[in-house]
Length: 359
Ligand code: SF4
Ligand code: SF4
Image (tube, rainbow, N blue to C red; front, side):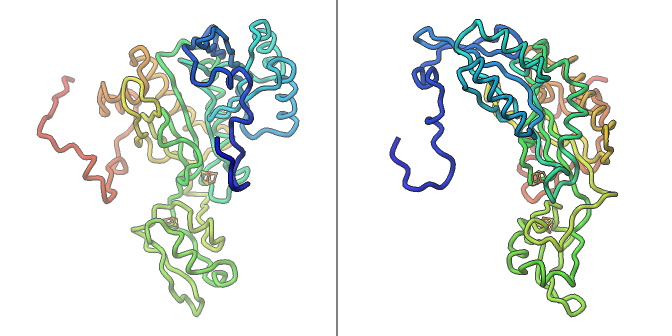
């Protein structure tokens, strides 16, 4: 690889590859799952690598990171990596260390699983813990949901893979656009503009330029240089609030979350798919989020009962049809399910072929 010309950005990943991965780069022949939570790769040379996956709470303390480093030093030559869904994977080259490593992880309170036909850790965003534009919490809801789905993390008895994502606003720092089940925080009220603060806290041209839909324009309100928002154009994304704290979007009464289904990144069997809207709004219900947990559990149960072997949720829905899925999952069809975005016409069914469903 050519020398980097700047020191901007992360260092090249190949500096950190474990020797076995460097030696066998591009030469891995096959993989199998010898037990839940363990992925065994075999290379053309016959060398084997066991990746042992443990769930983490994502927002980890220094103490937790030090513990993982200590476990890696003891069992995997100091090598570990994080998956995109916030699992930690220890990369083991000595098979005799796999079982004791799993025991140690469990003893420390970090369950091993989430590989293959299971529900892996939920990738999620910051929530109320950190981010200013959160419409809902992240860690709290994910904890409540995963408490219910946990048996599916440790086993591999599901029809296929089930990947769940959570983002606490539609800036979407999580993979909600392409997960089997996605929960997405939604604001439902226009930014509340503090006109007398605009000039002190915000730069008006930057605020106007921050809006992806062009909904903000300069305006003078009560003698203050400020902005106004064109309601019909606002999609409640909170981009303006990010650059201008005087345009608060958080609303304790009306914020909540929505549920999207059927996305996937994988191109196995069928093309990658975007998630589509299933439930437009569920109110925020801390600390145990009963409606969100119940809805996700119901969708998972419908998938388990109806999916064919290896079928992802979106593939199953395409096979049985969206009306049937809504019926099975007991989800009400509302006006919010009708896509009215400018380019929605491209997604509408335009052929004259109609299939009648026998009741
Ligand atoms: Fe913040 Fe939105 Fe990202 Fe959540 S999804 S962390 S609210 S920007
Ligand atoms: Fe524009 Fe988003 Fe602000 Fe609405 S919330 S005005 S769409 S930047």
